[in-house]
Image (tube, rainbow, N blue to C red):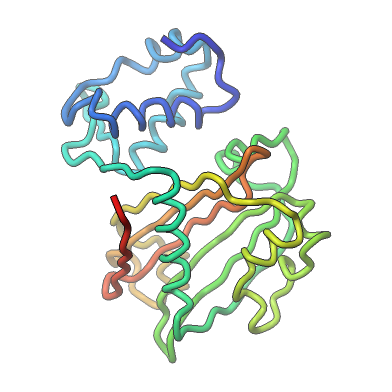
Length: 242
C-alpha cells in the first residue's frame, strides 16, 4: 500500500498504469471505489477521479454503472529508453517532407491537468505552442506543446511564429537549457475529432483521428509535454528492439 501522499493525481495514475502494464491488474479487473482509493492514498476523491479519468482517456480503464474496470485490451509496455527512441522517431517522421506552421506561441496559465504534470503552483505559467503540419495542401498533424515558462528567455524561438521556426525546436531547447531527456512516455488512442481539432485538420467534426500524447522529462521535471492528433487516413510506424 502506498506510504506517502502523492504530490499530484499523476502519481496515482502512474501507479495504476504500471499495475495494468505489469499484468498485476488483468483485463476486466474491477478497481476499488474512488472513495476507497482516496482513503488508501490519503487524498481527496476529486484527485482520484482526475487520475482515473486520465487513464480512461489513455485507454487503460473503462467505466460502467457497476464501477471502473481495466480495459479489455490493455497496452503493452517497453522500457523508458525504448519509449524515448520511439517518440523521437515518430516526431521526426512527421517532419520528413512536411512543413509545419505555428499558429500560436505564448506564455499562459495552463489547464489544471497540465499544471499538475509540471508540478506548478496555482497561477504559474507555461509556454504554449500550437502548430499544424502538412504536406502540400494536406494537413497531417495538429499539436499543442507545453514548456516551462523560463525556457522562453533561453530559447526565444519558443515564442516565434515565423515560418520555419518550428523545425528542430526540441533540439534547440535541449541545447540552450542544458537539459537531457532521460525518461519519456507516449500514449496513443483513437477517438473522434472535436470542433477545434476538426478545423485544424480540415476534416468534418466527429471524424476518426489518432490522438497522441508524449511527455519528456529528466530529474528536474517535465521538459516538454505535447498533445497531437492525426486524421484517420495517415499512418505512423516505428521500429524498436525488444
